[in-house]
Image (cartoon, rainbow, N blue to C red):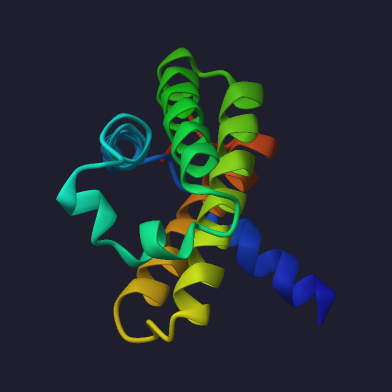
Length: 139
């Protein structure tokens, strides 16, 4: 069973990173900026994440997401596996806190699944960078 799982993960990582991976990293910059600098804005205060405190606190969550997203984008542009891994690790756990917040609030239909998608994306960044496959452009 373990070999099957490893083979599946290996197959899914056997492709190059799409340019959308760079664009996706911008979503974290938007979330982080909003929760760090615009935390009193109605658009932020009305979110379930804000109302629940994001498990770790709004300020810490926002700063973590902003800094890690900037590191992720810089790491992608510089092709630095260590920076990508560090940023993806932080973002993985930040969105895990978000998923827990959504689950505790009973937000099972929209918000919880979106948090899981973020967790999976940042997990992919981490795995692909750790296996030196993030920038493999071979066909």
